[in-house]
Length: 528
Ligand SMILES: [Zn+2]
Image 1 (cartoon, protein in one colour):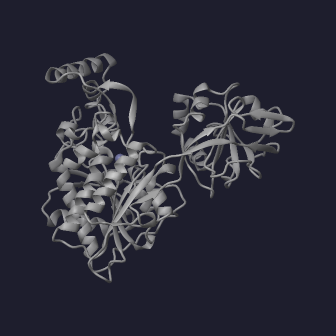
Image 2 (cartoon, protein in one colour):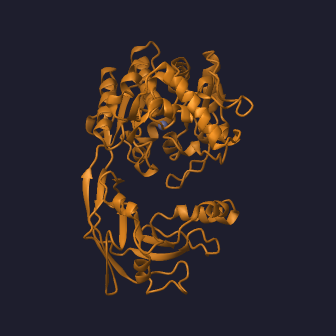
Image 3 (cartoon, protein in one colour):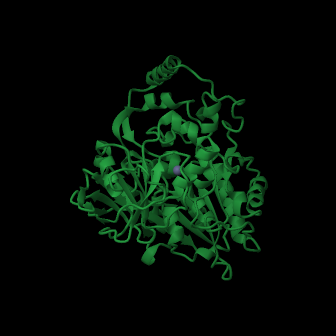
């Protein structure tokens, strides 16, 4: 609790990646890890692993030349790329992909890196939704999502917001030379110039005219780093193996405008305690909704003055897991129970960002410890909520799992190892923790896709048995109101105790935990 009030304090500014606030939050974690006697296990003998993240601003002197026509960045096209040294994209091709969501298009094989697929048109809200629910629509979307580099052309002029975004220093890009992506936005005329004036008779999969793309950017390095520490195991033979524990440091930063804390809370109480819950809630009219929020806000304002706030504290989201790991580090390094295998602590960055920026995926692709030494991984994120007071508006009939002090979701444990779930269950019953372990969100193809949406998925991607513990969504999820005073510390402590017991069991097991399910292809997209 003490650590969480510091870590989720306003002074941490929401810990957004690429900001000095993120740097301060990672420095705090590293200092605590060091104070607790953990070894540095990051790069070059430090507690950190940096990701090559830059703010990338498009230089509008960039050009795209096709035939005798010179197209200009910021007027005729916009471009983003993950290439470390973007200059001329010699050898890159562009092929026609048809109209967005046109399921009558023949789907050609997804091209390798070095080919951009151009799509025309705009997917319209309701109509697009209807198409996406059909089998053909689903197949089209899966194909589209597998294409790494895309171009779109849907208007006579570039959208002003898109131009602003491309030239905004807040845009962050993770650099890579292998498998770099290139994404283009073109005006209709620019796209037509590439295909010789008209799309009539252009079939999907056919290549554009040859072109020369010369891109320039202004790159500014950003601070984005994982914190990695290790507690060496006590058994000389087993110490080379590690049980990894993970949480995330980053959160959403600062909102553009300040909002009244209690109004925000009232607006979300009962309206979003989980997608499954929300989906089954009774429909209310806008007026009824407004009245309900007004009553709630007024009652809160009777107890305390209006407080304007713009900081996404992320007390539960990110914060609860990050401080739980410090607590576990303290217990293992100073307590009486000594793990035989080593314990690896990784505080990931970028969990709130696009998967491409995720620190866990970077760590697994560029591990600072031998990847094969990681026996199992446990991620903890959002483990401080989920009691009845968080579930206003959802009755037990609608979602009987939630709103009780024993609730905890376990996601992923069954996917790589048939043994892991049993060990977790045994830890819960041996310690008489009385937690009700809920696996429903781990169902194959679950619409929320939690099995793919947190850091444990990066470990599972390499066949490492991994699981997420979480108490799930609540009214303050991704709001400025996710503050430490709403965290249910007793509930959280029991979950941390479960993680502690499970970790010790894994660390002291007389055999290495078996990963007996087929390992996925680490390069393939995660399947929920
Ligand atoms: Zn999170």
